Amino acid sequence: MKQEYHQISSSAPRPFVKWAGGKRQLIPILNQHIPETFDSFFEPFLGGGAMLFNILTKNPNQKCQISDLNSDLILTYVTIQDKVEELISFLKNHSKNYFKNSKSYYYKIRDAEPKSQIEKASRLIFLNRTCFNGLYRVNSKGKFNVPLGRYTNPNIVNEENLRSVSHFLKSKKIVISCRDFSSILKDARKGDFVYFDPPYQPVSSTANFTSYTHRNFTFDDLERLAGLCQKLDYKGCKFMLSNSNSEEVLEIFSKSNWKIFEIEANRTINSDSRKRTGHSELLIKNY
Image (tube, rainbow, N blue to C red):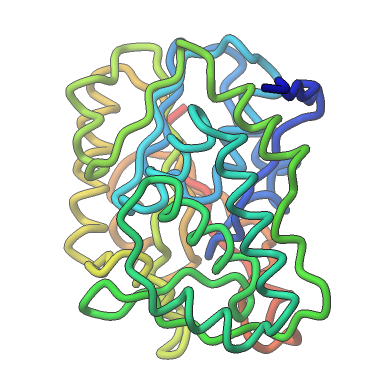
């Protein structure tokens, strides 16, 4: 049997999914605020992983504990880590069928309930690449419910980037888990750095993008997050948190003597492209 060899990509890894609140555009600003030195890196709202890949590009040997409550997303990270060639093969099949009849194939896959790891992971990436604005949203029953996007030629199989991501994730210093953000408290130690990028508090009645798991990120969760930040602060951990420039966020995080910065940000997932610019958000840190 012929053995296939694939050259490991040396290019910097990039997010393989679009994610509400993704930080790729903001990395140059966030880089100005990352601590110069730290031990382990924690990212408990992993999403598209822009900050993770930024950290790993600078230091491929960085110890990282990354997690998210979205089990399908975490399964996809693990699949890229362990079975990237199989995943690429499944994505190529999705791509071939999509271009035969995009609408019928998209809704067929959206309605499917795959059981295997590869099928679940390839479905998530396929839907993310072809759905409206790359938005990941589920209803109260956990069913993905985003309509087909308006793309002429979506890049469903980005082989080079998937292999690059896989190469970096194979480091034995990276631990991937599906868990609530509060679980990091037992693992984080003095000198560690935690980056929080939770689902944002809405700044208007139509700006709620918190349903990326079937359990919304509520105001109570935001208060839990503030309490966690206090405990990390006591432990001697460094943390940085991104959130919307909303009254609720300011009210909760102004109670402590932490630094709060207002930074300019674009909303890449807003359905109205005119509303994607001119937004500001908050950056909060304890160092």
